[in-house]
Image (cartoon, rainbow, N blue to C red; front, side, top):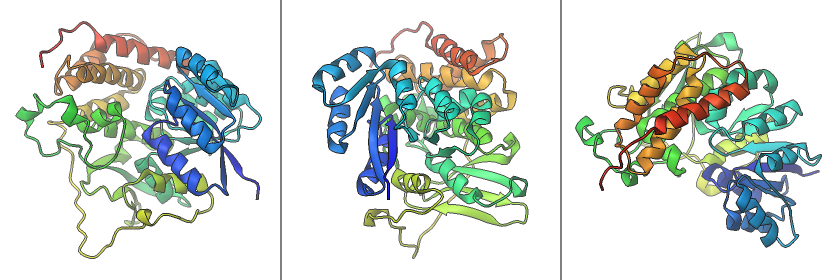
Length: 386
């Protein structure tokens, strides 16, 4: 059987690592022929050597120059947005994993869909900011990798869209699920980035702590599954064993239950339309005896980022893109200790409420709005003392 060529954009992150782990265990099925990252030269070279990859790319221009030198001609090395576009245009490119965060790779996703590639998507911001232009290009060639959207995607397989009553995305609640509101004002970046369940990058860990991540996922679900806002909901589920569920018009409910491990979502996505055998005992379902599952409504007063995201989705137009950019700026300030944790939603709301421009007419304009909102959110601040 011919191996399937896989390209991984965002190879050095946590989702990229899960994809590569699966590909390593399923080396008789997948060939990792291309790897792309941001600026980590050592990591991308190490991965390239391990997988005997042909094509390497780094988004950062200076890092890509180092990559070319240090690779000593072993790999075809590329840099910047043009390097990633050349990855997509390469005739060897068949399937692409988008595991990077942010909106920088939006032009690359557009090119991939325009050229008929199958895409495995773990990038929320791109769909939130530009879903109305992306999804008409996608057809059935976008398969979601995020655990919640992948769960809903699996539950919807074989079902008709008009049979869906409601979709629920679950959230662990983050590190401050039961922290009193007054104490949230003084929580540190170090404590906020410690997600209780999932190993994630710093920015998405903060988004999970504020519940902005769940709000962004709700907007993404609207685009991915062509559902109205009122059919998409979020629930707190501290055990993180049920990743999403779908309620149908006949009263029945499908849930996706598994260990909280991205490799399971990767297996289901990369294997589609078949199921790939799990070759790792650590990914087996947990023992059900005595197991208790808890679900509760999120507290939007203590975590107003969720409300801000829901309102941005309801308003539509420029607001989802503005939300993405304003959140990026606010989280950046929090990570630099320039604002407090509870000031993150305050700064985002200020950007959204002060915008007086029009809606974007293209994905390019939407991308510009993201950057506009990021800069507006950063603003001018006085650094807090430690």
